[in-house]
Length: 360
Image (cartoon, rainbow, N blue to C red; front, side, top):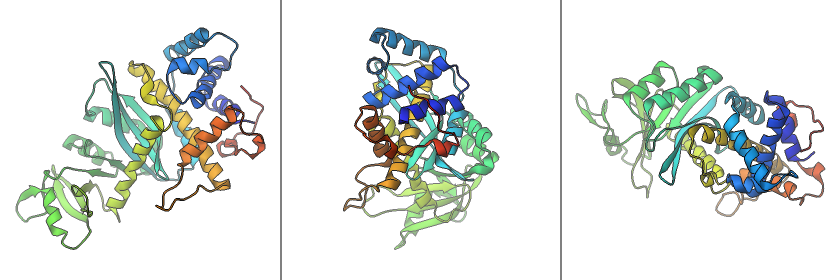
């Protein structure tokens, strides 16, 4: 069975959709892997159908106009594919670009998995610029409802995701967090009897490389500050956490996984910025499709890397990412460049699904 046949089998088991809609979604994903762009014209050209390209394009347009989806599908898929365990590290970030005069601004929550953020919830904001506190709260409420707060190890976020109401919300909801802050934030607990910029902790570093879990008070909340000023860095890294972590700085670095995700969605993968859609609802549907594609490619790459380990270069980094290994392998299958499909790793056993005959 080829990977795209597996895809349709998987979708049938997870989505309560009619056969025609699942077939269209499978066709879109099939074409997406081939053309590596979300441009709908190119996707229509790659449809495996006898109808004319114009008809395929109209079918795609109807699909984006008519279908609705439940984001918890992605949670279930991710949990089964990647065996996340009892505790999840969540990463929140935002990616944005412009199409003409329209801002495309997407707030995303992902689960960290071996260096990449796997998308689980997202929302398209109505304007450019930073996300609002209410947008973040709404997204976190969905995650808490789906995962349970007891299954969240920590939420990681950069300096955009700050503010007293936001911190208060996370503390009240009992969501542990590590969030980077600006040096000029005034805090108590560094100099007796005074409120001083949190950046003054840098003076206490001395010959130390880090200060971990220094008690502070910020906006009336008792938190812990950790600081690192690496040689050659333009500025110190200062994070605050809601509780003591053995190494808050090291854990915060896992935040880079969502940047890796965005690169997979964009230039290194599916060229998300090529879309001409500006309607927030349609873009959320597009990301739903891309999230399935990322999961499929990354899991395929993981399984393939177990069979044939990825070469490590002299600088210590992999010659290719796990995502790229999976993406390239699926594309080779689609283009007929894999002679022995029995050698291709199947992800269906990881989903608990019996392998069925389901070809496009």
